[in-house]
Length: 108
Image (cartoon, rainbow, N blue to C red):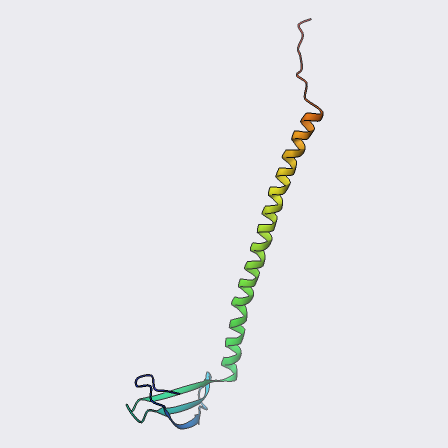
């Protein structure tokens, strides 16, 4: 791993267990021999990893469901347009076959 500031390779200083921390179980310390930057890298605990995994699943399933619903709505809309066109065509054909005759009112 390289230093953020000078891009020199960092030196591993050691790993330490974090007994009093719920979110992280190990901290690794690294240092840069060139610019003397110190870096601590925290490793997440199993509990935190599971929490992140559960969180990552929720948005994906939400997005997938939203896309699925949008696709169903689009298909339904297209079918509705086809049905309307069919009804209009059918009504025109019906009028050609059975024209509506005007009702004549007689004064007799």
